[in-house]
Image (cartoon, rainbow, N blue to C red; front, side, top):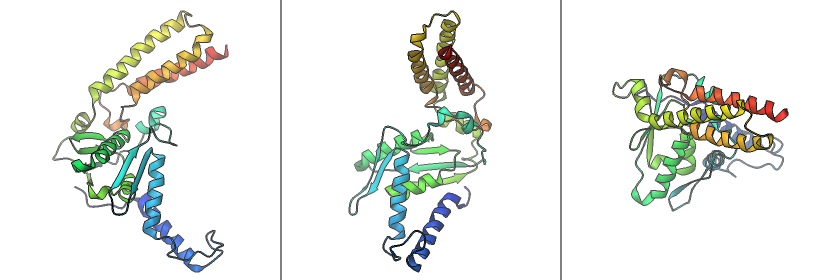
Length: 265
């Protein structure tokens, strides 16, 4: 395990709140403070909580801490602002890997079954890999996200996160192989490629009328999402040798270009 390292986004959030406190304490007219709000009108911890809740909501999570009661998590249908990463996978594949794994482990009591269910759903959505039952891994620096879960949903009551360069000497390749359901991912991507081979054959033979193009586009987008939504989109250094995601994306891009030509014709 590595010693704790500071996360720049988390540090900058704290520094920003401290600067606001100083400016607010100096009096009216500073930092957009014409009313002269004084330091202490909004406690730093309160601000951290509300800011964390807002950021989590943008990621598709309703979170909160009710005084005297337990924290709660509820998943929304999907992120409210962010573009799904499978729509721009090249950016994910090209990310630099620092050769550090972030390992999240949690133990949520049975009485908090909804919290546990939604936490699991959220970290799956964030493309963590499940290494063991309640041990999840990712190559992404998720410390800002985990801090939001701590501030906005009391995650520290149930979980811990570690940085590691290795897990009991297990190779990176084995971690990747064990943490994600590659048979399912490969099967979905092979299915998409086979389906698109048939679609392109229909297009080659002129068997798709112009009025059928909108439906064809919708069907292709659904198929592409199905093939890519479970893909962790790892950096190139970690991709399995039999990985097909990059081929799927090339076929998807080629289809979109061809569809635009046909729609304009």
